[in-house]
Length: 289
Length: 322
Image (cartoon, rainbow over all chains, first blue to last red):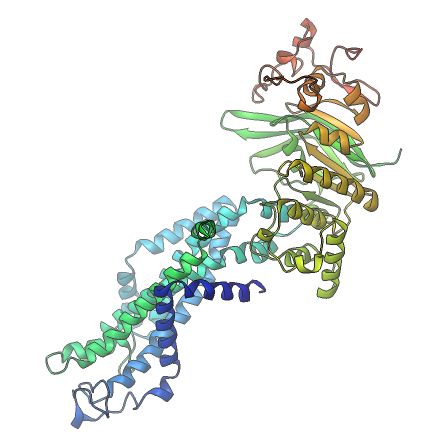
C-alpha cells in the first residue's frame, strides 16, 4: 500500500517529539532484537542441567545466575522471550485478521447479521478470560497451541468491536456513498476504502494488546497450564524461581523484569501511536503551530 | 428531437417513518434529452435528493418506490438486477456530490482514487495514470502530475471538486448527476466550476442533471429547468421561459425571493409565508394552496395537473404570467 511509507515517516517525526513514546519504541525494539536472536546471544543451552551449580548468584559464567537445576537463567529468559513473542505475534495477528473480517461484516452488512455477530462477541467476552482458558485447558491439556487458541478466541471480539464501530461510522460518509454511486461493489469498498481508514486504530489496539497477551501467556505458564517443561517461558521461570525464592532471588528478578519491560514498552509505544493517529489530537497540534 | 437519455414517468417514492408513510415524491415526470443540461430547483425537503437516490437506486433502507418508471436509454432502471445497476453506475451514470471536503477518501492519494475509478477499464497502471493526468488537465488543475501523489487534505475545496468532476467524467458517462456541486464553494469558484462544467458537457456530449437551490447558477448553466415543490413538479420548461415568464405561483414567489433580483436595499429579504405541507398526511387539492396568494375554491378540492406543451405548469390559473 502506498500510504504505508508516508505513515511510517510521519510516525517517526512525531515519535521524536515524544520521549516516552521513543523510550517505548527503544524498549520494544530491544526486546525484539534480544528474543529474535536468542540462539546467537544466549551464552548457554537453556535446557543444559548443571546440578553442581544450582541456584548460584550472578557470575561471569552465569550473568543472571542459575535456577534449581543449575540452568543458565539468562539463556532461559532469552528463549522464554521467543515463546512470549510467538504467542503474541501469532495470536494477535490471527485475532486481528478475524476481527477485521467479522467487524466489517457486522458494520457494513445487514442488521440481522450485525445483531448475530454482536451477540456472539458479547457472549465470548462475558466469560472471564482466565476461567475460559482454564476450562479449555482442562479439556485439551496444557500446550502452547491451546494458549494461542484461547487468546485468539477471546481477542477476536475486542478487535471486531473496534472495526465494527469504525466501519459503521465510515459507511455513512460521503466518500463511501460516492464510491457506491460510481459503481463500486461492497467488497471493493471494504477492501480499498474502509480498510485503509481503520488500519491505524487497529494497529494501535494491537500494539496495546501485546502486553496483555504476553502477560496472559506468562500467567498460564506460571500456573503450569502453558508451555510444557522444560521449555522456558517467562511464566515458568517465575514459577521455578517462586518455589526457590528463599534460596535465590535471581530467577524471579530475571523472569519479572522482561515482563515489566515489555508491558511498559508496548504501552508507551501504543499510547504514543494513539496520540499520533488520533485525528482530534492531531488537529489540535496543527492549530497550535 | 433526439431520444431522451433519461425519462422519469409518474415516479412516486416514500419513506416508512415512525409517524407513517411519508410521500416524498408524488407522480414526478420529466425527461432529460441527450446532450442537455437540466436543472432541478426547489427548497430543502422538496424531494431533490430522493429523486437522485431513486435514479441511481441507492435509496435509504426505509424508502420504497410506489409506482412509476425510470427509463434510462429506454431501459427501466427499476427492473434491473442489483449487479446490472451497479455496472451502470460509474459507467453510464455518474455523480458529483455536494461537499468536496467529504466526498473523497481522506487516506488515499488522488492518484490512487482516480485509478480506482477506472477499475473496470482493464488498463495498465501506466494507462490509468495517463488517463488520470489527462482528466485532471481537462478540469483545469495545474500541474496534474504532482497532484496525483497528494492527499485530499492537501487540496482546496475548489480543487477537490474539480478532482471529483474529473473522476465522475473519467468513464465518459451518458448522464452526469450533479448534486449541488457548487453549494459548498465560494462565489468565485462557483462561477469557475459552472463555466468548466459547461465546457466539459460540450466536449463529452453527456447530459447533466444539475440539482441546485441557487437560481442564478441554474439560469447560468441549464438549458431546461424543473421546479419542484413538496415532492411534485410544479413547473418545467426552458430556462429562459421559466425565468422570464414563470407561470406557477411558487416559481414566481421563488424568483421574487432571489436576492440577486431584489431592486432596492432592504433589511428584510422577502420570504414565502408558511411552511411545507406535511407529507405523511398529504392535503387534498393543490399542494401549494396554503401558501399561495391566488388560491381559489377549486384549489382545495382538485389537484392541478401539468398543463400540456413545452412550458408546463401545475396550476389552475392558466394565464397568471400575463
